[in-house]
Image 1 (cartoon, helix red, strand yellow):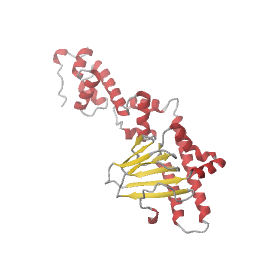
Image 2: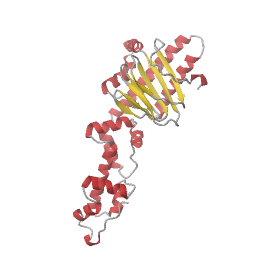
Image 3: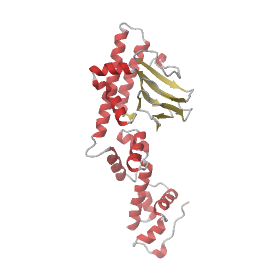
Image 4: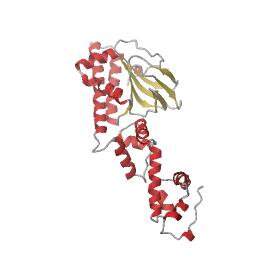
Length: 301
């Protein structure tokens, strides 16, 4: 990556060029960006940092590999969450007129923009390989912008169209893969995976990596369909399985660990909140396998 390709951050929110502008930012002096909107398409390729973005009223915290598509007229802003972490990203602006002309001859180049418009989901998370492919094309376009070579305008046009084609092709492959999970929806696939791996690590980051979906998308998927966050759903399933184990005679000290809880105090509080009684009291009332006279409630602390 040539040193001159890294741009000084600007708060300007209008295009100077007719068709497109592309910037690579690597900031340490971080500033939040107030809510704003513009009349061109913005594609945001996240490489590193700790920020929160609000796009069309939806919050997201991008992770490396995320691509955010901001449609024209959509309000959005950015808040810096940790100024000690370098903030690296590509910001790509392209005029609606250019996209309109391009899609008249090549409708495929409007796929991702149509998808975001119809789904209301502006964030996509790409696996490493396709994201690197997109990064290579972004760097190649930046290199052409800053170079002074023969037939530069033609080269810029080719690089620009190659970037747009790659973005739409990678997006199409990702989305089609997601929507064609064998016989199930995203929610069904994720919930099945959770039930099969309750004793293991099930962080939102882990689920995002397993299913190649953004954390933002997974959270909204669960909230929209069942009214619970993924964490709440996982906790509920772990508690239900633990209650089943206790009823069949499994010692409480074994049951909570085998169901994915890492410490007794956290398990105890969650169990009481879910079932309205302590694990020992629940065992006394439901399990016929243990001598009640010898049951003693462990300390939750």
